[in-house]
Structure formats: structure tokens, C-alpha cells
Image 1 (cartoon, rainbow, N blue to C red):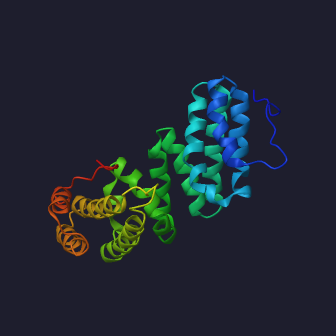
Image 2: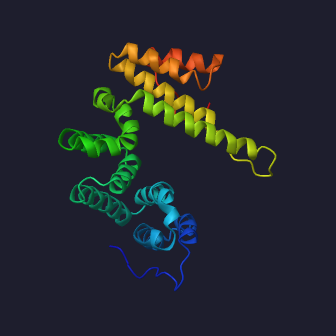
Length: 246
């Protein structure tokens, strides 16, 4: 049973510091303290720093799941929070932020099929809402080989135009940081290649070969070199790109 008074927040808490301290608490086997901090962070971090949204659904959820493997109250609380997020998603008429939250819990629990089933339900009942959620859902649909579910959302020209704009913007940032002491990672090219190749592979998997070829031609207007052509050739065979830079 959770001891809710194992840790109480200070008068002016720093949510980033609270989360940073969790791993130390776990190493010291202070599991009840770690759980109290994780619960507090999940419920209140954004009240103090709205920019911690991605941290809340990545590192914090990861720490929480790790703790759950060591401490059953943490595991129970983890799945209870996931279930609340799913219910809030349904009650809110499929709001994006709840979908992001529940998908983060399911990803850590290796239950992405649960996220896929929810998205399928939205796609069948509220197609407009599904369009807003699709970018979040696509990796899970691919992971679970639900390629046909992706078909209505594969908007070639718009998607590649947006990807090209992001690529140019991020490339400029990377070039500006080239001589700094702490340059940002060189991810602009990887992200564009991944976006374009994923789109092409999905079109192929849905037997839209002409659209896939057209997508290749459009993508090559932004980057055209041997490496990118090789990635697109693989995509034209229905093969998806690596999820991380190689």
C-alpha cells in the first residue's frame, strides 16, 4: 500500500529536480518516496512548467514503469493512471493530449496494440478526430502491421511539403550551431529521410505504387543523393526506415 506521506513537495517545488531525484531514490530502495515523487510529477509538473509535457510522457513514464518492476504499488498506480488516461480520452471526445498520455503508458508496458485498437475505434466513428491523432498513432500502426488503417491518412503532397519545411528550418539551426561549444545534434536529414521513406513504404503496403513513385519524385526535390535514393528504393519494396540514426 502506498504511503502518501513518504514524501511531500516543498513549498516551491522544482518539478525537474523532483524527477531527477527519482532514480537516486530507486537506487537507495526508497521505493515509496520515488512513487510519491512520480505521482506528484505526473499530476502537477505542468502546473509549474508547461514545457515539461514531453518529459512527462517519456522519462517520467519510463522511470515509473521501471519502479513498477521493483515495487508492486508503483505497478498498480502505473496501470491505474493509464486506465484513467484512456477514460479521459473517451470522455473528452478524443483529445490529442490524452491520446499522447495513454500511448506513452502503453508503449512502456509493451501494449501498443491497445493504442492501435483505440485509434481504430476513433477512425471508424470520428474520422476528423482520427486525422488529428494520426501522426501519434502511425508508429504503433506500423509496429502492429496495421497498414490498411493508415490508408485514409496518407496525404502525400501536404505531408512532404511540411516535412521539407521542417527540414530546411532545422538544417538552418544546425548550420548556425556548427561552431558553437554545444552544437545541436544533426537530425534534420535523418528526420526528413525517415518521414519520406515511411510514407513511401506505407503507400506501397497499401498497393498505391503510382502514388509511392510520385512521393519519391517529390521527396527528391528536397534531397537528391545516392544515400537518399537507396533509402527510397528500399521503401519502394515496402521496407520501413530505421527508427534511429545509424
